[in-house]
Length: 453
Image (cartoon, rainbow, N blue to C red; front, side, top):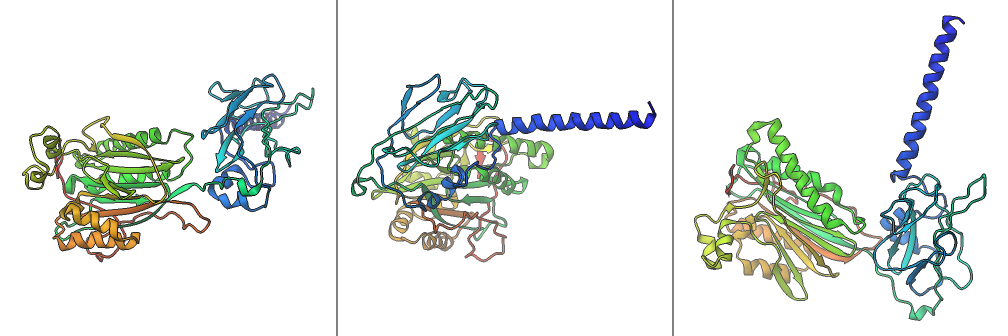
């Protein structure tokens, strides 16, 4: 056999080997929820979640909301579970709600999730696909099946079927649209500072305000890096663990700051406050560290939700200082807890809150503290337009002298409509920019704990 033939065989063997490897990797990617196109011509579940109007485009009889999921065929025939607000996972994985003991089912094969009063099924990138019947059988309001037919022995997986009697349209409950944030934001460097160390972002599901500290050592870097690390959280699909994801991401941002200091020792001592809201699955998840603030206006009550992690606040909590004395205390700007390179696992204030359409939130850096609290409250109560409200609050700060940077985010919880604008971020304001930009940035503060600002 000639050397040329041997070389050709070697290359052919290598090509076959790589084809096999790519086939295996491709199958693993699909099984690990790397999405693919749906097998039907109907809108996918992900498209329905992003654009609810697609689910309502075709007229359909109004039906009663499903209350129970029943397995109609297969080893689990007769098994049923009640339908609540949580998604239902189907697959071979042990954490699945319904475990499919079939070699042709993927570990995380598909899931059922509610959208208003209706339920949808979503293929989770399974290896063998998910099949949906074109229409329900007579007398049913909806159904979903996840079969896979083995071409050799004709075996079929039958996962779920739901039957609900129809009721007159006038008695049907109107489905609720998903909740989103409507928002406005503005930041200003103030009248004294040379640069803005505040950073902020606000979108349909996420709002964050961060106030950097460390002055020339990198307060602006700390706040901007933290906010940028959190941008990808601006969506509403978390399968019930949004609060955990938010807290973990802030801890990840803290580790990122430590890495930045390791790369550039000149940044040592930088840090930032973080006050964040994540709207997901009908709940508002709150995370906070530092002295930026979060206020809520709901049912006529204006209330500060965040607690300042400052030395004077600790004195107030211990009964050693009256609240009215805090503003004149010589250590009023000393922070006790921040993100930065000084604590590997900083303690966050975390909460999961019920949310109602129409409630309003104000997130702000401590630069707004130079405006009297009752003036801030009156402005939020009386100014209905969100853009006008943030403009007024920043202008009031500038009129008060604005010795610090000030960032204000106003948001209102609302039901999503097809006309909602795309998410927008708060950008960066240069020191010489106009006081009327809707941008965000920062403040001069000090290196080591406790953290004077």
